Length: 318
Image 1 (cartoon, rainbow, N blue to C red):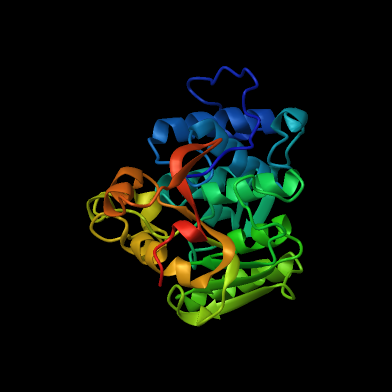
Image 2 (cartoon, rainbow, N blue to C red; image 1 turned 90 degrees about the horizontal axis):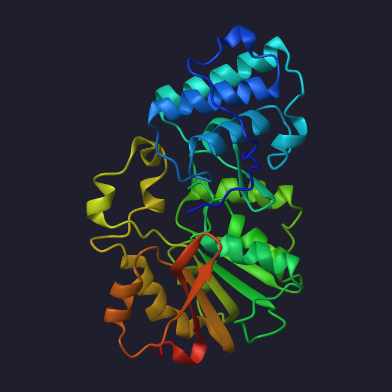
């Protein structure tokens, strides 16, 4: 559910066998060794990268404090013994513990926007984040949002706070309320919000979905709720088991939270407001549950039909 900014297509032939750690004298050496090591480890991806090469680049560049989208420009940069040892440790930890790279590094990205992350919250990787990051770049707008300017936003299930932050950046006139059940997640979100100096515009609310919003109405509601079905939860790769189950499990068909959001959103939207929600592979099932609702299914750079948009008028009355 993530997308990569890593420029790893640089034409290296991965050596076999890989060089020993003692021969890792440059970023290029380290990348070749790490990509080969991760490829051989048969790991699961999906927390910001989807292949061993991008994962290796992320571990090295973020681990050394280098821009994560500029591998080519630093490929000949020498590394010190301490840097080599750090890279080796990160790669070995990724392989042996199966912890996602973002947790090992304490950092995750949506587009160019970085966020502090640890196991208090799900690793940021929302397609809604992709849309919001694009909105920041394109005159602070989403083409399907009719309520312009957006002056109020509600995010349901904020986790690390990444989507609330991106919404605040995309809609600079908006006040943002961000809700989560987890006190640990809200504490992490507060750290990220402070890091972006947005505490004056983003309010964190503890509670279950719309409960803390009471009778408030918003121009935009966004949510990337848990949507992993029970059968898939039982077969998650080890990487995903490091994440809070609360952020993943969506009930028998994965849509327990999505149903509650669709049912309740109409009572919390302004007249021209709308709901932006991510449901993974739930498009067909959700359309069957609500046959009278005309969902607008959106494609992003990294997904097809996993996010829907509904204007307030199309939602069930509360």
